[in-house]
Amino acid sequence: MNIEPKFSYTSIEIKKDLTISEPEFLQYSHASGTKKILETLVIDPFNDALKSDGKPEYDFGFKITRTDMSKDSTSWQPIFEKFKTYLEIRADDSKAKEMSDLKYIEGLGYCINIDLIIEEIEKRKKENISHSEYPQMNWPRKKKSEPNLRDIFIPDRNYSEINLENARICLNAKRFNSGLESEVINIYKDINKGWLDKETGFNAEKIPPQEISPITRFREIAGNYVLIQLIREDKGNYSELMNIIIADLNKIKQGEDGELSKLYNVSKQKDDIFINIKKIKDRLDSLFKFNTDVRYTIVP
Image (cartoon, rainbow, N blue to C red; front, side, top):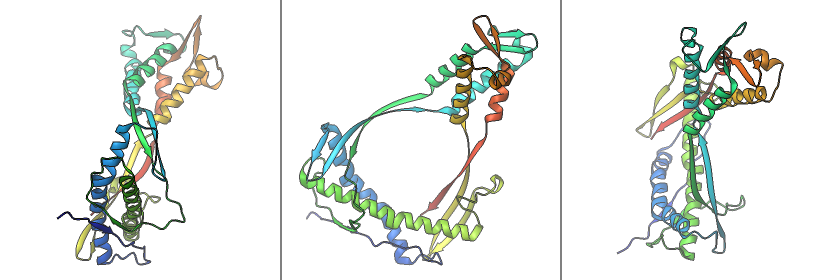
């Protein structure tokens, strides 16, 4: 006999004392599994069928539209690292005489043609750009006035077929999962983030020093141990600084004088523009900084 499972949940709330009851812990423990079941059984097969079908719009009493997405993504860290190595090699005076692309200019030191610098950066950008194209199905958003769907039946059907009933069940499954995420999973995580803050004094705004990261605590909830971690993450501002360098070089190339000319020790030689190799490296070093963020790990 086929089973027509019913899924349901009860929302949990943040209490002043940040406690979590056993029913709330069980609710959370089941939430991720329930969410995955609905994605695997209903949402993904139906969504994939719509993408494969290729129609720009479907009307099931509610509309689902298709957007063909195109995205270029640039990995700036390897661009920065390779460009820095390129500069470091050429900034070493003991090797400079062997570098055909360098020119010694009296009073400025070893300089390089600005076109070669721009060419090097563009070369590294091409090596580290990925292109992706994919369809995106746009489902109707839940109105604020609509209550969250906390109970759902899932009939035993083939959800790879495009029809009205499957569309309605899939929409309900998506709405159910959205409520499960906001009313159970995220609330549970927020409670534990607050608990860790209360225990340690550290949070997303008051970030722990690098030397004591990660901040780790075990918490007992209804006889179960929960691991809560606050991990400091320091990431270089690779995109920001490389785009500043590119903007500087383009302004110099276009003939801008003044501060940039002094900053890079610019020298105009007939139709060519040369900039001091060490000044470029100094500029790169001065712009580099870490952007500090945090990441939480909560298990389970």
